[in-house]
Length: 327
Image 1 (cartoon, one colour):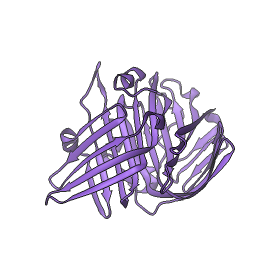
Image 2 (tube, rainbow, N blue to C red):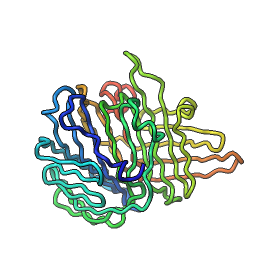
Image 3 (cartoon, rainbow, N blue to C red):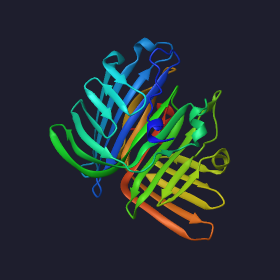
């Protein structure tokens, strides 16, 4: 898929099927533990398309002060708009287009531009995006995006100058039952590397299926996509106490990694689920990540990021608490 296809809006306004769809942007200061995350969302509950809403989410992560600021705003979809083709979404007076975003919500405002000369990255094989399974789709429309502009938090304006990050797109008819998701847009010792990884578990009746862990790593001009069904069965992924271990391999390469962040670096968000209920997303954008890449010839590459990893955990409140992940 090209960028135009990746960012095409899948939402059908009059459909009763239930749908959520988000375009989110995130970036980190190149050296300091500072980051922002901004999400433009449409939410339509199953059976009630007339209740569809646009949602704005914004977060500012300050690892120096050990604080996370978050903002949220919901607006009837009648006051919003989205379109297929070139990226374009309006949530009230907040705008998102290919290369720019402006808006505000509850003490956080932004005026940003971004560029990305790199082609999109798919977490799943391309054919999976037209299938019923998985119900939740995720991709990176603009990896290695560079953001510039301003983000104002509670009256303090922060200048953003070529912060590395990404523009992302996800959608589906229901949220995954339990997952960890992570991304690194440039490691401290390898700025050209890009990692996208998830460990997901879905319900089969009353039980959770074994975890599936797709991994895609771009390392310079090489792409290691460990995301086919055979890769998923061979991969490993587990998380608890805000620490996540993942590993995948094929005949050419083995990718083994760890993500972690202190509890204060996460903020809890309530994501409404189209079929009903609420999922809790514990969201951090200043996590630590370490990855070891071992090649078939025995050579190794060590990648590390001190505080520029995106790390999210999503699930039911009780299940996350049982894993030691509650705030």
